[in-house]
Length: 156
Image (tube, rainbow, N blue to C red; front, top):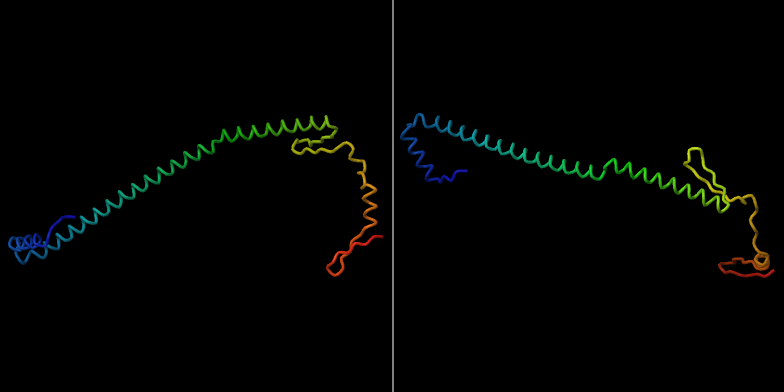
């Protein structure tokens, strides 16, 4: 804090001894020591308080920046607009699907709430074609059997 050398302290001590005398010098030295200790503690306390204030201001600045970023990224109006736009696109798609289904002969059913849409071909009651007769004949005449890790083909 102060640049006082040992020689300077010695000179001040000798002068204090001459001026104050040997009886009052110890009490004065204690008082000066207490005063210097209080001054150091006060200085350190002020330095810590200033440091805390600077940290608090830094944290407050970071908090304000994060709030601004969140407000920019989570703008509620833009989110609502985006949701409404998506709902309109879904509604338009379902209307197009209904129109396409009617034109192609597909029966489209939707629930009262409009949330689920199912499409069924109108010929769904008819049976599907079976495999061709050539494939069925081929399956009957050739069969495979595994014997001891080997595949053997047998003709009937």
